[in-house]
Image (cartoon, rainbow, N blue to C red; front, side, top):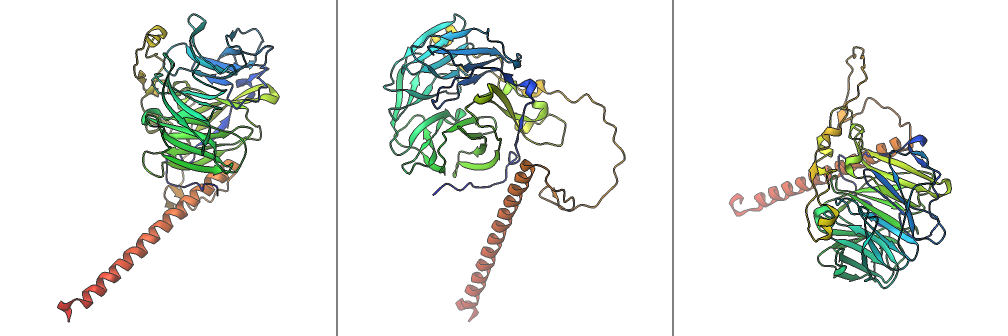
Length: 425
């Protein structure tokens, strides 16, 4: 039986996806045709790295983010593996450190200051499926075809934790910020798509396992530690589901879904300090569309009527200043990210707007919704938002009614006990 999403009130309930215009996309890129289940793409605030189709394999392309439009085939490629590159990950807050894994079962840690690998991790017995750095870049977690989930110290290559995933065949893994949890996506014993939560310090068994649906495409997980939102995107799908994660059960709450007709081969993610906070953008994907040789930005936006800076959706976040230099990190030093406020990046619209006098009108507002407006939805996303909002309202009303019925029964029972007590006889 597939897992049924739980609906609850959230300020991220109505987050919607917005696709960038064609001139802001990256066109003419020979995206790899490798069928391996990976993103083939990694993004930081300055560069976009893409695994490309090339003779002999083992290479990826690094492009400045401002170079949108049609890409000329003269950007330098980085080579070092003996087989095709399968995944690449930037060390999140350490300058110019990137990890890559290959069909040769190795992980290479690169220092782009010198343009060469500085560490090889060779603890895997089969092809590596996925990699993920933790918040300060001190840990690397991997999944592998040998059905094992590993937590590794990347500078020494030492395996700190290891799990045999038999019931939950794990494919993808991601650290959940400072919660010291891992989230994996995979396949259950009944071949349904499934997610699992793990304690990164004890991989003996998952904290929870939840079935999502019966589709066959691999699920890519992405986590935003600032909003505690989890995004699940299916390979070959055009949709992206998003959820809210909490430290208390049921841990995972369904929010909404973005849909697109173009299937995704892989997705990269922009760091938070690279987002457009003036547009209330809380997440941005870079979607690989192989058939078009196109990389398409998709912005996830929280709809707000106010044009002021929205502090509640933009807490202090890791900024542009690296926590360590490559040499310091390679020397074994760990340091938390340097935090910044995104308010400095907020740009209020400079357009002067003349407003006509507003006529007073009657309204009936319930939970922030004007019932007398009765404006029909114009797009599918608006229809979905209206549907989920109504579902949420129905659920709250049912809960309130159930609580009222329970209170009525309690009062009736207390009244009956009072009538039957010896003092009243």
